[in-house]
Amino acid sequence: WTYGALLAACRRCGAAQRALALAREMSQQGVAHNVYTYTTLIAICDRARQWQTAMVLFRRMEAEGIRADVAAYNSLISACARGRNWEQAWAVFQGMQRARVLPNVRTYNSLISACERCGQYERAMEIYAKMRRAQASVTPDRCTFNTLISAAGRAGQLAAALALFREMEFAAKDARTPKELSSVAPDAVTMSALVSAAERCSRWDLAPPLFQRLESPPHNVRPNTICYNAMLSALAAGADAAAAAALFERMLSDSE
RNA sequence: CGCGCAGCUUAGCGG
Image 1 (cartoon, rainbow, N blue to C red):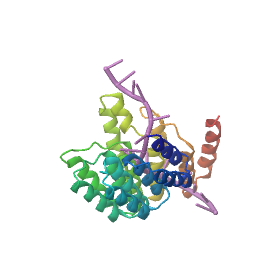
Image 2 (cartoon, protein in one colour; image 1 turned 90 degrees about the vertical axis):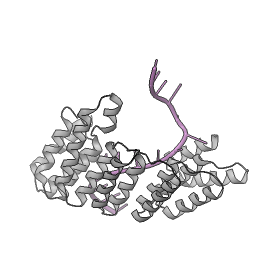
Image 3 (cartoon, rainbow, N blue to C red; image 1 turned 90 degrees about the horizontal axis):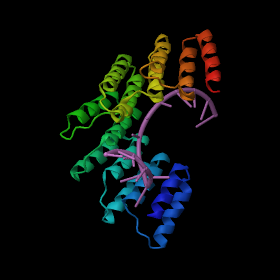
Image 4 (cartoon, rainbow, N blue to C red; image 1 turned 180 degrees about the vertical axis):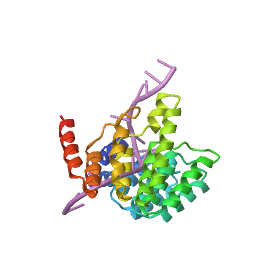
């Protein structure tokens, strides 16, 4: 409906208050909410770090007899993840299975993200294994790997982070269609996650080669500001002033 | 023949 599009637009613009006002207006005018408007509202709670409110909305939706679909569950799991509550995220996932709603790659990515944010690297890897084993097995995408690399880096598991990156490279090499390739090819997020992982594991020496490998063929990743910041941070931690100065020059010339 | 914004996932630094 037109209200649904308006709510989505509010979310994209970060206008959470405006969206909530719109939602109330809908109710007052007797316009029924549906699974799309609820999902948008839950996603707004997600970004606003209000996982409890997200739970309330979800329950209200169910109480109104609206069946949650995979996207509705995903937005709720994501809200729990951002709220650093992996146990709640897992509970929602179990409820989803009881309701016989099939998880998709975003479901697993959000669960992995919940573990990552809670410092549960091992658990993140278990979920990764689980998603591939499931009867309706789900193919990991770039986002799955990026999140796992970040989790490994935070856990001080640099070897694991590098192994995940290698898996990613293989998946990209084995891609049979452009669509498949674009779903797994490393990107700027991969680059910053790897550089940060090297820094966190005190292997500053590995940051420049990783950066270079990502920006070279076949990956051809274009570093963005976040990548440069991650690199500068790693070089600073490694006390490599000369390399940092050189990188800074490049950063300035690249932005032209 | 494919694609086409009503909804869901990932990275750095500073504050």
